[in-house]
Length: 324
Image 1 (cartoon, rainbow, N blue to C red):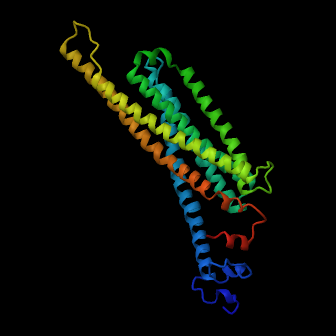
Image 2 (cartoon, one colour):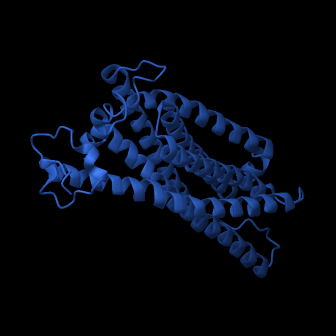
Image 3 (cartoon, helix red, strand yellow):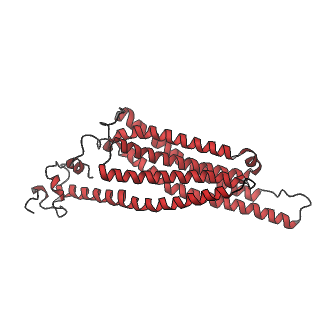
């Protein structure tokens, strides 16, 4: 214990010999050495548990569940005959794409966690991280939105749905969502990673003229998209509810009362199922994408502080200075 630096002698949270590497680091005037160590250890624990261990465990379960879901949905999609209504099959197309998007994001994040722990973050790994996060958000939002529109048209405008909505158009819509999401995410990733690693980035992006405006614009866009999808969900649910209450029976004059009751019950049952699906999708979308919105807002608020992280080489003193 004689090797403990004098500035850390009275610190009960000093870890020997791990903290010896911080002995020659400068300390801010408004903080004492013990406070600096406290914040540093807190940041290390947060990074270890909340950014590595917990996401690792959750991602394993999520990968298993999404794999099982994808297998079941794909099996159901293959068993539906062409003679059956295409409503279910069209919805399954977007569900399959949604599961593929989730699996792609989970596996990519898992690989990035390994890269981070083994070799640390660089411009390339940071840009891939941003690309995966952005593309995952956009694809999930797009496929949730598409599923909502399909359910709404199938319940409220069944004749229009049968004549207009086809599997080919659903495939085209899926391709469009993927192309748009990946193109937008690549642009965001290449520009966004310059914020953290400006010295090694192949693209020059000044903080005030490029990074700050781009970050604000992107945050506004994803926030508006998030709120818009939620709003569409709520509007569709209200429209289906109103449609269910006001829809008259379309039976002929010779239809028996029993037939009328059965048709009415069937229509109401379909509407209730549709509203339940929309409610479940809405809750899932809100919970799964809310962290991305919070992360984007926090990043914009602390953008100036984050912009200095990528300067110079990674050292113990740099880690010590950015502990809080």
